[in-house]
Image (cartoon, rainbow, N blue to C red; front, side, top):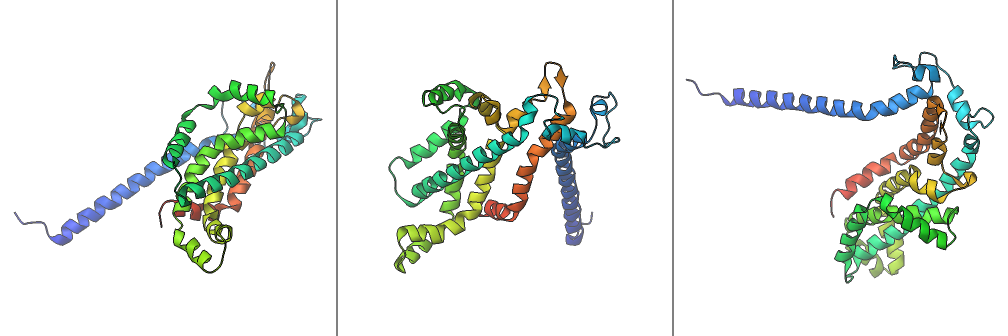
Length: 297
């Protein structure tokens, strides 16, 4: 028998490589469809009347296109429940609480990550392990202790109480993630700046901060989404209607008489818009931040 020529073997390997490439692309496409379809169905239902949404025959496109669901969601004169009248107040509350929590989280996480990476601190390794252990504790297990603690401090029904809860819940992961970004910046850059006359704070602010900024944006998106979508803590700590946030507002579409699916889907779509807009604004820095966090300088 004739031995296979190098050209034939190379062609066979190329054919197998192409087949595997198309196979993995098909698998990735299936996963993408599975992930995107619920979002598409939410937006599609937001433009359909309730009669079409609850029909036994599903419609994958809005046959009877309507904007009444959005009007009913944000206009208290068209709302089906009293709580829906608080949409604009709840949107303001969410922006205030989430933005403040993200800023507090990033400031303290950045300082902690810099301290762990740049200084020889006794117990730094144990602190990092403790951060991971804290992340393993389910949030529902902390509801009662957190409520009692904040209630004793008179911080329930208060922006500050919810801001502290959100900052504390996202701080551990943010510290852990930022530590990798800070370690990726060579310390020699800061030392060179201090040799040229900059103070330690000046080197920290002018050298380290700009280089870690993509990482701050990446972790800030995580903190923003986590806090923006929280329902449990907001529902428990903010008991007055005018102090509630948007996830609690969405719950108002479900009443004893049934669920207003059209208004609910419209409300979910409206609530998702700030996250999408924020992501589009920082998309470039997010990609560079993820790339920078994947390697160590």
